[in-house]
Length: 457
Ligand SMILES: Cc1cc2nc3c(=O)[nH]c(=O)nc-3n(C[C@H](O)[C@H](O)[C@H](O)COP(=O)(O)OP(=O)(O)OC[C@H]3O[C@@H](n4cnc5c(N)ncnc54)[C@H](O)[C@@H]3O)c2cc1C
Image 1 (cartoon, rainbow, N blue to C red):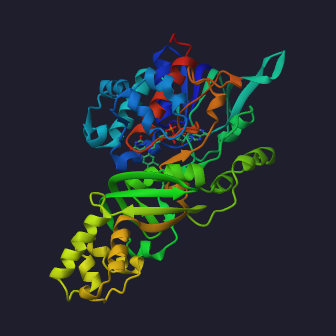
Image 2 (image 1 turned 60 degrees about the vertical axis):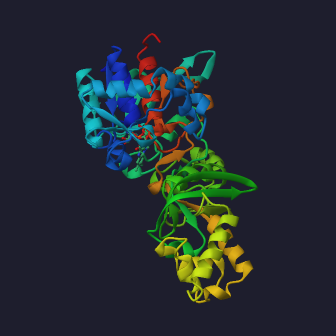
Image 3 (image 1 turned 90 degrees about the horizontal axis):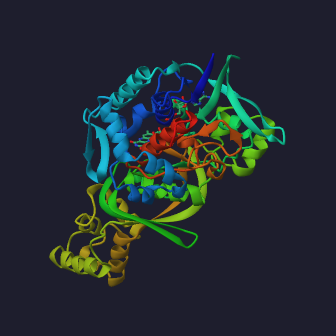
């Protein structure tokens, strides 16, 4: 049977693309490798699904880390308000929380998935689960340019073929590969000449060199600022929240900084070559872009960078010193670690003197002016060394993907192969936390579905 549109990948982007194409009248098939649709969607927002961000559309692009301009057309074509109206029209009421983050009223991601599945049924999309696409059917697009292809369908890993007038690739990135997005379909697009930019884990915890960090494991800090310094460039985030873990740091401020670190200074994981076998000819191409050198367990080594935590963003070093003088005069016989506990959380009181290099048993009245200066400086700029990130299994998104220069942003059609559309996290664009990544998936999926169906724009 020939379909008008075949969509590969039943995640957020693929489901949206399939619904939109079918709604526009195209006979559509959705091909999903896993046993369920929306497996990643299910775990988003800690199971609550932060499905978009209700900020002004123009503001959206400030939250995109890579290639925001590429997203102008898809986002303006189908913005957060359109997504919210669409999901609510499917019987899933929504609410907007702090930071304009949008969730289903029920706080259940399953309700968003159920709503999308109802729409797939309503518009008659033929859904094929447990069906893995292994490649694309193609022919030369034109005699005068035999290198330009026309995609004519999909071939499956069981050898079957599905013919379609247009194919939408929506197989995701490579993070949380247990949800189905293992990156294997990148190779099929590379056979058509597409390139994949360097892939890095993004929105991912940072690994630190110092043991003092792991000694504070579990400590969550609120209302702190964090600065990342690498190769003379500084990136500041906060005030906000972060936390210490057994390997380093995580939490909202750190995840935001991690995307900058990963893209500019991070290493590349060899997880891709482990998770699927890339044919030799493409492996070379991949290796050129992706130096799969380092992959310690769960850890992707990157360039060393300095991380400074400002524990008192509301105070200057002079104000801290004045408070220290007051505390010392009122508590002359207290030792240093007890004195410092009125400035830092309890879990930090034993580690702080180690970081500051001051004897914790020293009595308050013996603390020198220089030690006060070091104390204030440590409170304002507690220093750690970033040596890498956790790997793709802990990365909320993938930084890197199909080079956006090879995709027409006004249609999502490949510039290298007629009839092929690409959307979602496969593309080299990623954003901060707050619903922006799912909005990208909905918007690019919607535009791809509309254009693949040949609907008037
Ligand atoms: C833990 C976690 C929490 C997150 N929380 C949020 C959040 O709250 N808000 C937000 O905006 N973003 C969030 N994200 C990011 C967001 O989930 C992704 O950016 C988004 O799901 C990408 O959608 P996608 O459709 O492009 O890819 P995916 O959702 O990864 O879907 C790709 C689909 O393609 C299928 N597939 C892959 N290869 C094949 C093949 N060869 N044949 C057939 N099918 C195939 C996969 O099985 C998968 O179902 C989170 C991510 C994670 C990991």
